Length: 145
Length: 141
Image (cartoon, rainbow over all chains, first blue to last red; front, top):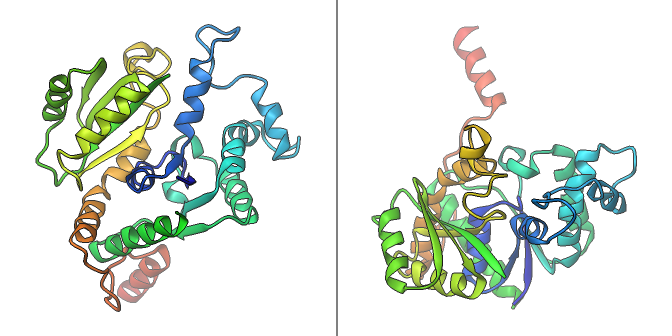
């Protein structure tokens, strides 16, 4: 079982396809879960504390907006843990907690420079593309194990 | 450790969220189920959730999609009832991907039949902004 980072890290389609093949998908909701379930001084525990942007300093400089550093506090450890990655190109799909263009650029850059098996794709717009999409992901995931 | 998952059905599926909820009740595991328009949210101990997910997939292998959720159902930090309405954070991503789910389902069905993806076939694509600009210039200039 390989730890596969999916990007966008909230993607249902990629998570599902990765888990169907028996690998572990690294998604941001699992990171959030750890935070909201861990008892701390805050009640209820906060999903983002003032400490998190400081953790993000490992990945982005101090003059980078705190939003980027805060997001990187979640995404950075996932990128470090990843043994492979599937990345969707095209910024219009990176919504939700990844709705930050600079974070997207930084996360993709870090994934590329990590030198791990990486598959870059675009979401399909018709049936033929969808078949190729599923086929490429299956081929990639089978090659990992 | 607790785990929460979304179980989402594609538009092509004949399985209703209520069918999934009934199936979960039949399994008799200690799991909370919340029905939603797109599927169900299930919450419980991780081992129970993983075993249930395997059973649910069998209901419609190519049309049921599963994803993790960070917060439990009804959590006051996410529940619309506590936050005064509005779309739930994360809804937009799910809405965006739900539009593509039928295509992915057909891709998975094709894969299950052992078919190779068609090569050399022209694919349709939406016109880009540049394409639209060229069309408008061509039509109105």
